[in-house]
Image (cartoon, rainbow, N blue to C red; front, side, top):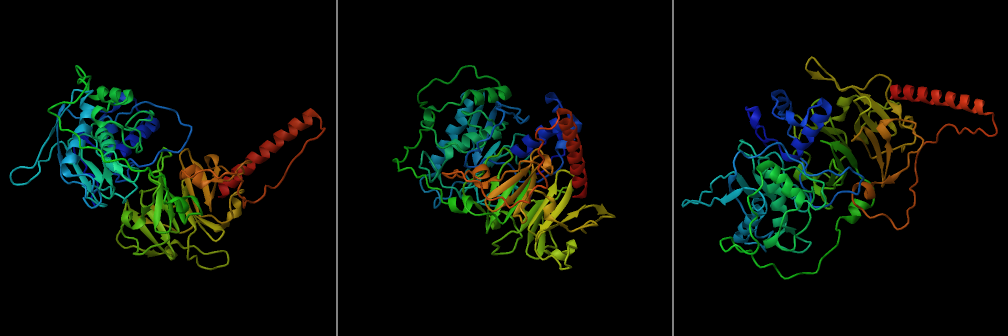
Length: 542
């Protein structure tokens, strides 16, 4: 499986849209790069380092309700150097999966999706058709309907998960290409069981023209599926999208007059309305019971259960209510796999480590590396009783110190995964294992741990999770919360009962009743110093 090709010309680097957007924003923050420094050669050199990651691609379901700062449209920094663009269709939806869409209907819907952008910016789109020999011309923007692995490094995950992805403009072979998941049921103004091709196409073509995601409510560039629009023939972009595309390509001299264009392909008649279905077939799997493993991979949180997984993206959005199949995404794990024990992304080289029973696998992106699986004994973990560890409960890299931690049977080991003389050392550090009770207030036995976002550490057990702000220990208020409600778009239970917290009690409770004010102040200061010292010592000991 090939990654998107790298260009030797730094000025033509094109990276899959969301990965670029995230890396560029983070680089600006970390390196203090100003917004007008995009063409700086050193910056481009940094940004162009190969990293075939799991992209943040548009998912079907909406974002979690989170308090986030609203922002307007976002530009990728890349655009076409012309306004006359060609496009072509290289494959059509599978008629057995999407029986309601004929090939000519697909062409009409895509034509109208391009029209949404050319109505407000000086862009001209021309479709290239097959020649007399049946060969399809390439075009600037090539559209295809693809299944699972399709040779661009970003596999689809089957029906109900990722819908489509697109590549930014540029001079690379893959620039502008737009791929739709052929396992989806594509439709035109269909019911909730299908996915509206027009809406998704307008969104993806926005990326192919150089737009990133927007958090503006009416924007078509929001990072999640919005359902069909009411009237495709008279669809107009929201102001946020108009401003974004005009920032890249300028303002059109005059808006196209309303009404039907006699030279424009007429849309197919929409199908008769069917009863809307609001069922959530994965509710029980997603919202009830715990998970086998939870891992932070490429900045996304993966929830594994059985042979399936769900993904929560950096912005808190769930890619899909429906799970993806592990076997369709991670190539190289054993056939018939029904449980992942633990997973984490290695800090030094971004490899992904899976633990299953007494073996482990190392992945480069979504493909297992040669020579794996290897025995868990490579890690040299022995319990305090002297027994060899034959299963890992959880694994993560603590943002507090950048070291790797593996948990098993109420004990944990710390690793400093250094490379010495070209060899990676994975033996546990001296003084381990230690008891899980050192992580005060956390469950004694855990299903998964991650460090995420601002360095916060999350412990997962059954239906609940606990958060340590900034990864710190000895926090007074560590209240268990619902995984389903906060991470996986599950409805809150009718009565909010606090789940039982299997935590270890704090050591003391101090009361000052009727004492002199100066004594109280001195005592409180002393307690603060003692707690701070204890926190520093404990963090060092972990």
